[in-house]
Image 1: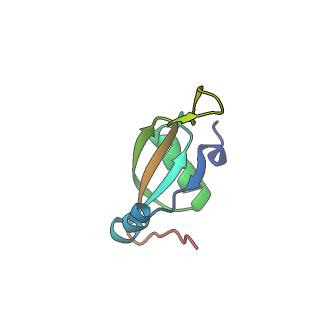
Image 2: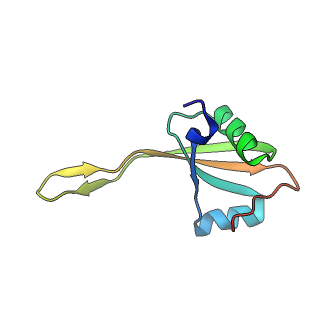
Length: 94
C-alpha cells in the first residue's frame, strides 16, 4: 500500500469538484480507505509534481444494494480526499 499509485485511485470529476477547482484551487480524489492525510499528500506531490497545502478526507459507507433474490449486498466503502494546492499550482484535467 505504500506505493503512491496504489493510494490514489482516480480523480472525481463532478459538478461540485469542478467548482472547488475553479474557486478554491482544490481537487477531489478517490483514495484508498486505509490511507492517511500524510500519505495522500506525499502521493499527490510525487505523482503530479505539485505542492500540496492541505488535505481533507471523508469516509463513505457503501450503499446497500439488492441482489437477485431478497438478499442484500453492499457496495464497497470508499474514501474521498479534497486536496488544496499552493497558489499558482494547477492540475490540467482534460
